[in-house]
Every structure is written in structure tokens, then in C-alpha cells.
Image (tube, rainbow, N blue to C red):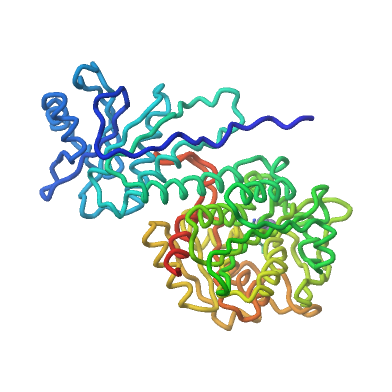
Length: 499
Ligand code: BES
Ligand code: MN
Ligand code: ZN
């Protein structure tokens, strides 16, 4: 059977202009702020519109409360110049001096999404006139982010997309960074949102390689024969129950001369049934998202290439499908890994760490400056931190501080969990070097990280468990449900800060 055809990843034409152009038939997006006394206050962009409609906007806004609340969206029409009635989206920005990067990103994304059932060819966004230039790239990124939905296989998508978005008061540099980020995040989301039978390990690898050649990254794919030649028996064991064989993809950006590379490693379990330790339907239903770590690596590498960062950055994706068959790896199995250490398998649903054992070992061969891995690794991390916060675990607190600070700048919540030595015992095996589960359910996010630590050969390393924030059950005003693209902005910010 042929696969259904997905909608292309939307790529509206983004442009910049010095000021808000009121002479066209664009839908206008302008800000409304709160003043010191918490009253509504027009911003430079809404003042322009207000002047063009004879003070009607201010009068209209004055009759309503709540408009200035950050992220609040209202729509109205105003007679502007000779154009007749023009649709105006007013977006609340709250107190301008308190506005964060993420506030701007969300405000813009919510504004664009609020037009999803308004046939509109072109939108002019005025917020560049209202907010600090250091936040302007978020305007471009948020506008692109808003255009990607999870309904990629609907015959008619049910939402209108703009063809043209012009950004007033934004400069080319901010446009360039914001566009690179927006495209990177949407690529990550798309890879995750694709159904699992389509997005199997070889398809994922092909898309990563295609992206690499588009943006000028070097790439290499290891198929099952090469994985065997490289002694990646752990990746092969996890993938053995599947008719879609595993892959390992390496993407490389050479921007840093002979400096040691920063290496990003992603868990790419393209579907996690749990294997013989089969998940119940409720736990399996969203498990196409179990390659979100690898998808994040691909997204970040795209941005790294587009921004041409003066660093060497390598992305490694460990790709396998965790399935049930007569060939599946079993409970009680002892498997060899590329590192030489053996793993006792006590639960085939703890497969992500097994895949990462080999992927991390490949990273260690590259003389890394630092290794950061991303993985939808444990339900336990969601029990600890909830659905919106990523867990950080490290063998080097400086690395966690640097990523924490980038995450804070970008408004993506993260929280560090301890890696006390007392947890080391919990993954000791009686028959092999290590076992793939801890003792009982307790501290499951940390015992998973302790397992990984055994495969980094003492290199500076940080593990980010994105099981919670990578995939959302429900939509919010600024984004659809499904894949979120979390950590792309944080990692790009962190990489830029290490230049
Ligand atoms: N992919 C899951 C973790 C997960 C759960 C990600 C929910 C996103 C949402 C992982 O492979 C898994 O199954 N982990 C087990 C580990 C356990 C068997 C030690 C878990 O968390 O239950
Ligand atoms: Mn699992
Ligand atoms: Zn998994």
C-alpha cells in the first residue's frame, strides 16, 4: 500500500520592513501593553493603527479590560485609510519591561494561530516596533512555529496558512536567526508527528541526510551491516524484533577548525511498543514520539548549519524500533555493547538507554569537548517534574549550569536531578556489568541516567530527559497538540554561548 502524502512543512515568505505598512490589504498584528498603573496602553504599533483609523482603536480598547494581559488575543476590524475595513489582531504584551523572549515567541505564535480560520494571504506584524531588538528573532521564529500543525494527513487541513508575513521594525540579522530557529523547531516537530510506520529508522535516517545535504552538513548513515561491523550490538538487540532494521546517523558541522567537537546524541526509538515487556495501549498510544531526542538533534543541527556557528558540532541519532517478534531481545538476555561492557536486560521497555549505550560510545571516540544527550527516556521523569519540565542529569555541574542558563533565557523550563553516588548500586547486575533497570520504580529518571553515565568514559556529559515536554496531549493558544520542538531554542542558545 502506498503511504499517504503529508502536507509540506509550511514555509510562508517572511520579510522585514522598517515600519508597519498600512497601505496594503494585510491583516495587522499589533501590541497592547499595560502601563505602570496596570491600565491598557497603546504601543508604537497600535498607535500607528489608531492614528490611521481616527482614534477608534484606542476608544475600542478602552471599553474592554484584559486586552493587555500577556498573550491575550482579540480581533477587531477598523477602517484604515482608503482600504475600508481591515482586520486587526491585538495581542496583549503586559508590562513591556517584563517581557521575555518566550512571551514574545508565544504572543506572535498565538496571533498567527488566531487567524487559522480567517482566509488571509498576508499578515503584517508590528511587534518589532514595540519590543526590544534583542527579542526580535523570536517574532520570526514564533510566526513560523505557528504555521505547523499535527494534522499533516488531512485531505483539507482545516486551517488557513498565510503566504506572506512581513515583520515591521525587524532587522535582517534577527530575521535570519528567527527563521533558522523556526524551521529547525518545525522540522523536529514534523519528524515526531509523522506516524511510526512511515517514520521508521531508515526513513528517519533518509530525512536527516536529505536535510544535511540541503544545508551543507556532512552526514553518514550506518545500516545494520555497518552497525554489526562497529560492534553496536546494543542498538541491534533493541531493533531485532522489528522488520524495520536500526540505523545510526551522524551529522557534522565543521565550523571550529581543530577544536574538539560538541556532540549531541539523540534517542531515536521510532516506535516503542515496550517489546516483550509490552506496554498497555494507553502507554503505547503516543510512542511515535520516542524518537523526539533524535529529532531534536536533527533540528538543532539544521539551525547550527544555517547560522554557520564557529564551532565543531556533531549530531548522532541512535535509531531503532522496539517491537515484538520471535527475534525480539528477551528479559534475562545479556547483550554485548560497543564499549565492551555487557548489559543484563530485565525489562525490554527500558530500551532507550540500551540504544544510547552504543550511540554514546560512538560519541566518545570523537574526542568530545562535551556530550549532551536528549531522550524521551523515562515516565519517572514525568512523575518527578510533570509534563512541561525537562530533567537534567550530569557528571559535570558546570555543563548543567550553562544549559540551565540558556534554558532560562529561552523560557524552556528545566530542572536538575541529583546524581549522588548512592544511586550507582541500583544498576549493578549480578550477571553482567550493568542491568537496564533500577531497583523498583524509585528514582527511575536518575537510575536511567546512572546507566548512561557508564557509557561516557568520564567525558563531560549532560543528559536531558524530555519525556514530559517533547509531546503535548492538548493544544495551547500558541501551539497545536503533538510534538513541541522543546530544547531546540535552548541548545542553539547554549551552542552560541560556547562560541
Ligand atoms: N519511551 C519510554 C519513556 C516515556 C514514557 C516517554 C512516557 C514518553 C512518555 C521509555 O522507553 C520507557 O518505556 N521507560 C520505562 C522504563 C522502565 C521500564 C524502567 C518507563 O519509564 O516506564
Ligand atoms: Mn520503553
Ligand atoms: Zn522508549
